[in-house]
Length: 406
Image 1 (cartoon, rainbow, N blue to C red):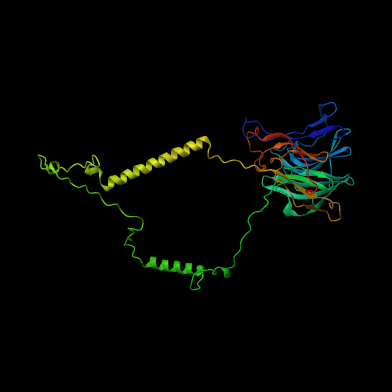
Image 2 (image 1 turned 90 degrees about the vertical axis):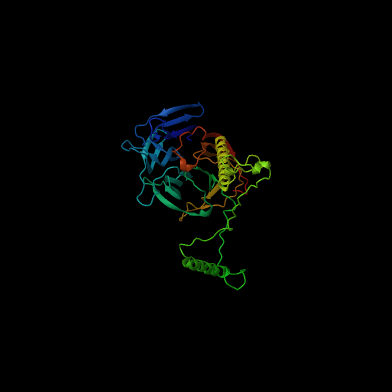
């Protein structure tokens, strides 16, 4: 913000779906939104930074200070990370690349948080150096003189720091920087149980022998027994895993039908009226096993059909777990001391914050924080999603906190 205007520089856009394998499109345009007149205007400058996105910016007096980001120069094929510092004079709209002293400085990064400590100092917090390189450090930029200087800031209370900072912007409130991030579990995971070896034998069976020693003795005996077995002798397991069913022998009925003989001398057994047409070929154990196998195949097929039907209906579709944002506070009251120190305070979240998002806008209001927009997606998948229509949010949240939380 500059007086009654909002200044927008750079940015990125997803590539179109065709042609394939295109990189993000970065911008180097400068736009100014006039709030009273409710209109945009594009400002053309003679000298401008390369197309930039993911940078941080702050307004101090008549200057807008821009640091870091992803850039794509005219000679580069892909985007490159940077830690350069640029400043824009907003009276005559001229850009200047700011020189800094040689020495320790922040690594190249994008997505960092930048807050104004005073008229001569800026604080840089976090950022990302790539898909698997996320920073949780802090740097102080001193803007005295023509050549500015970076200074590393020590961080205390790291066990209370948020999960990731680079995709969640921070907002300065007094001598605190408030960052929204995923709420941690209150239990913090189950504690690790440690049992010394001297307690393993306590409570065991008679004889006073420890279970570990007994198990080792059993394994040694089993190996001796296996070594003494003859390899050509099969072990009899009959009765251990069930018994074979006896073959059913139909009784021959007495009567004229049972004693009759055919003209060729073939004996015909009588019919069993109680069980219907039971022929000898269909009463053996082979036929019984075949029937059981067919029944098992039918059951398996029925189960497979049921599973396929449930999958089609989406019954086994995993529900996406929803995470919520909580408040994390960084105390910066000692950042300007001779030994710069910032401290993460213990969080006290109530688990009823906004749904987790990233790359949203967070500003200070009247006794409240105002959060707008963002992408409802995991930061690790940024840039790999195809359809963002259901992920981009335009929700507006007003966040207040009781004094005991802060």
